[in-house]
Image (cartoon, rainbow, N blue to C red; front, side, top):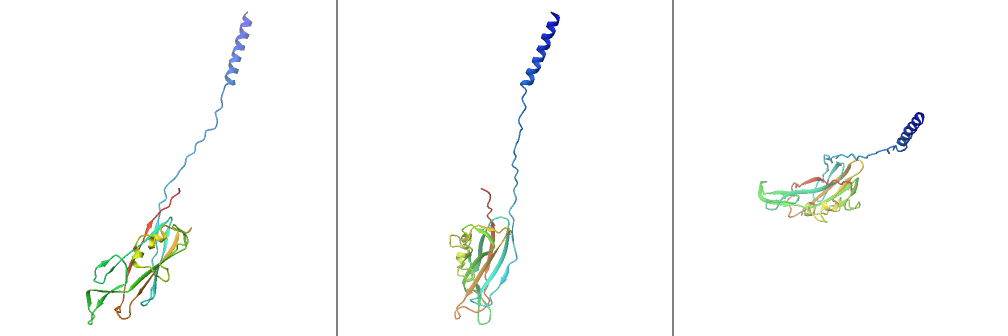
Length: 208
């Protein structure tokens, strides 16, 4: 009986060991995915203007800038000039203060040239309103009015282009054409000037 009991105990121990190994589970591989992102800021720079000035009434002057940016921008034009009575108006027109026969300025009298503008884009990547919309005001033969140059709406210079995306090098060119024409009898001779401010506004386009 003693030997029989020993065999039974050994058999039971072996059965228990086999039972443990039979139900052991090997875990699957565990993986996790992390998306890492950071914000890269937009930058904008404007070159010094390249001016090509006309020498007289009726000739076209041009001012060209090279814009550098790593995303889309919008152009905005503003300007002021003095009205005929010397008050400030929010449109850019070629103007000159009149002088009398002694060469002294007349404080509240200003003459104006009929002023027109044109804008041309070059070397850009794309334009929001369509890649064929690269000129405004007939560009090199300017016929855009000062009011439309600085105004909003579909016929204004800014909204003709809306957002402009630079090319893969991060640049594009903008040229402003200006022309002033005076009447040979009623427009006093002299030097006429106009100031136009060109402002670039970031219009960053992000991934959808």
